[in-house]
Image (cartoon, rainbow, N blue to C red; front, side, top):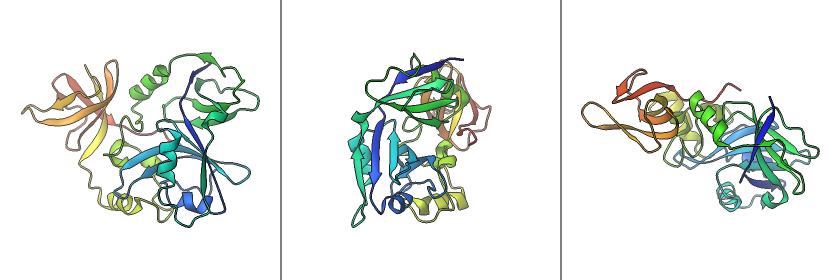
Length: 262
């Protein structure tokens, strides 16, 4: 299998300062203490998803944040919203890199930073190369791995889980730590874990689907909305009462969405 790649608009932000590690630990959903690379969610106080980032700890003690769906300015605003007297500086480094998303075989590029990701449900990487470096693989459309993601039932931020959703509704539990201690949104995460009080769940759906399609029951009541679609496969946020195998018109409800095992 060859390496395929596509240019990406990934925001690259470096966080530095004496308090950087402690500050980030208290803001995002991931436990950063024992890992060098992880996915993290940034939640508001109500536990809703503001952003998803890859967090990479660098050898000099700084942190690189890679965000595939926000601009660097917007990411910095989310990350630093609660900086008060902390020694924390967030710097946009996006223009210092050519940014890629690669899948297939692992890309081998001298001087590149390569970060493995499972967010597409296939072997894939975020890749940062110097501005004068050629593509790290054969150019292709990111629609290919995105379709694989949808068929595999893997949720995405913000397509499937955004500012109106809890991570647990959308199968993003793997990106939430329940043991790290206090962080923004942590109380809501703990309450959901202990009480399981969700009204919606992201599920695979099959049939004639399109993004934004409202799914209605036999009484004509809207019980879900398609959030991602690729051909006859999709992911829809539906009422938690709907059982796997249920039919809503020509659309069949499938298994809950979930991130691949780490």
